[in-house]
Image (cartoon, rainbow, N blue to C red; front, side):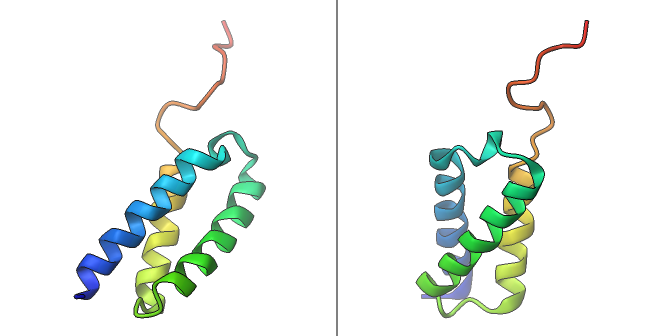
Length: 77
């Protein structure tokens, strides 16, 4: 399978994990720890992905965890 398809499959799996596990409500430190561990897991599942692709997944995953509109925060007014 070409790396583009592997990367797309791994990205979709990462997003699915993010949505299912509740990490969106975690502290920033916990998000980083969770993402590091999850990328290690993804690396085991997709051994043909290189370090650059895994770094890209990590960055995309962290951005996905930091949406433009914060989750669950109340307005200060």
